[in-house]
Length: 566
Image (cartoon, rainbow, N blue to C red; front, side, top):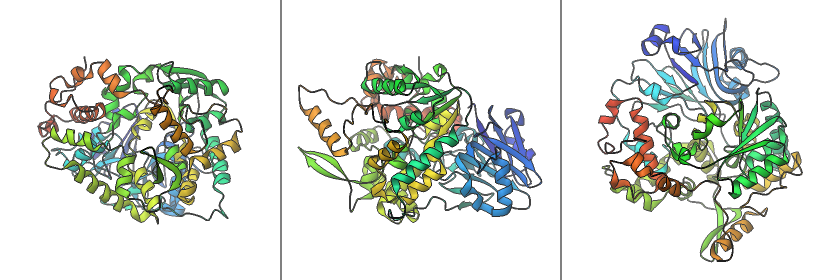
């Protein structure tokens, strides 16, 4: 990886027993921990910063903004921690990990409010070891063993739930928590507290906070670009930051999604590039696999095969705006329209959390049953995934007073698409708008019935009245119900063209580029699985192979899957 954080709760000698200090651009040593960072942009405003002084040592890794005019977020935090303790984390803004060794006080690693940066740790070395690269931390484990439940969750759901990783000795720092030398401590920043809309106007508040959040992120330097879709989320960024010069979309030149993105780029004066969806879109090469960390699908890293052609220093994207602002994980009431369940735009009164989350994660009962036939795990997939999701939902329940908020909290804690940001920020200075602290506070304070596309679009129109000059190709109307009905009619009417999906077709690409032979040549028995599930098998085997031969030998059920790409 180009950027990495790695550390131990111990001194420099313990650190160098596991890694050489020469691998890192900077190594900070406190009284309790030692941490190294590799990041060419260390010290850039809005990005990773380090500080050592009489107060101790602090490293903020990722995108971070301190209050006021302070440019060194690490120095600001260490000074604030001396006065306010852990409460100071509530004022640190961005997508980051904070590593702190305060003189005479705590030493810890803290996630941002929503764990947008993973931190992996193990105690198998005899000293608590942590880092941002799961493979690098796992490599320190003397005798890794497969975590059966984690692997099953990944294969059937596309995401490993909670704090698990693919091997038992490796774990992740939980959502909104601190990693201590011998314990884990919840912080309590991410807790739902819905406000009355008589005193808290969701549209006004969102518009004002979006404007401030984008202004904060305008300080990132150099040539600026955006990963641009024809949808709602990335366009508000493009509309507000005038110095974004380049935009990029993955899709065929004649695809509706590409045409819509091109129109948006022209509207706001940005150059546009469309990357054709060839084998690079699906190919699970080493950089993709490393950023999947063995817990999430590399498929979500849509741009990975094209980064050498992206000529910018800073990159913006709209990832998770639909989750935080538009209610992606809330349960919607539906009505029957000619045998199809169509959302009405209203919340379901008594949702079944497990059924809702299975649908949101894209679980396929039929595909899972076929997958189970090709593995030696003794587990009924339907029962297993239902129990796993029920347990995870229960773990998140204390952060939300209502079922609808608890659903969203569970979705945020287990967001499958996070490798998208992880891979992108390894190569560019990357802004993550949805993780702005003010916007997360808006999410926590706004009742779920107002976290909707309508609210978001009203707020966007406050910032740009022309934001919908070019509508998304599959959403010609403002209301969800009308869009769903038109989509259904188009699919059922021979003389009408159906709405195109926004992403390239996986099955077509898998067949076109002969990936069964190139990725699974010695595993013909799995060739009948859907492309998505075959890619999960390749992802997992490839990630394990990248760091541990010993762990591979413990996986006889995966042994036929040799990820050889010609």
